[in-house]
Amino acid sequence: MPRDDLKIGDLGRATGTKVVTIRYYEKIGLLPAPDRSVGNYRTYDAAALERLRFIRRCRDLGFSLDQVRELLSLASDVARPCAEVDKITATHLADVERKITDLQSLAQELRRISATCNGGGTISNCRILDAIAPD
Amino acid sequence: MPRDDLKIGDLGRATGTKVVTIRYYEKIGLLPAPDRSVGNYRTYDAAALERLRFIRRCRDLGFSLDQVRELLSLASDVARPCAEVDKITATHLADVERKITDLQSLAQELRRISATCNGGGTISNCRILDAIAPD
DNA sequence: CTTGACCCTATAGTTGCTATAGACCGTAGG
DNA sequence: CCTACGGTCTATAGCAACTATAGGGTCAAG
Image (cartoon, rainbow over all chains, first blue to last red; front, side):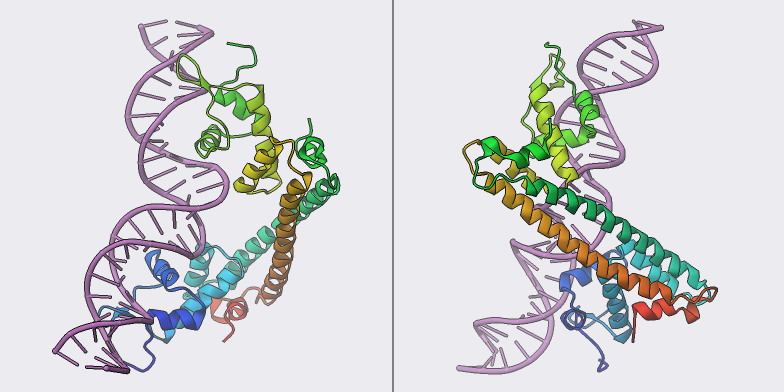
């Protein structure tokens, strides 16, 4: 076995990925099924390590697994236009920005609601509940 | 049957909730099992409508179903201190605020990555992919 | 009396993992 | 050589919070 062969645990440690997650990525086709050792252990090479690193980085950036799949497929096809990659990124960025504004108005409303809190009172005169359920 | 009896579809329309979701809330104990009509249809009264409205409002505010459960339980116990309600709200607000800052740095990074896009090029010289997988 | 809209139950799917059970492999110590 | 241990294997079930589907029953209008 070549020196750069990694067992699944090694790969996990090298990428900060749990073993079960790696197997999960394999099951859903994000990682190719690797060769097996005599004892039926998965053995990974440097390419697998790089691919998993890429996947994890994408996940850190908040891309969905489907988007990661697309990015991987694009990355392997040097002739496709770079604009396709940018489109995925831009779509994701727009999603993130929309989420931010949604959460900002949410936070605003929660602050407003929380501000109505009747210090040491009881539920019977809780104005927060009134604020949640205006009726 | 009293005039304020609602079928599940009516309740759904009145609260903007899908029928399956209402049944789901019942199954997980968020809504009590209502009376049934002769034909075995669920029949809801005004109290159920109010309770579901409260649940939906909480969900709109981003509370988890467990938090909603707690809020409902608090709301029904007039002797408990209002501070408990505020604590749930404050915790949730902190969550939301943390999510916002997380997403903001994410958006920042995505903008940075997207800005590297090599306009009309192909994947072979795609700098976005390089930016995602710096190596 | 049939059509259509509604309702019923039960089960499986979604996303992205995580957890568990029960078995096998490989190496180091006694 | 045996045993203990840590790692690995498969398969299955669980998490949030629903959504979707299958295969039926109910009810009012035409």
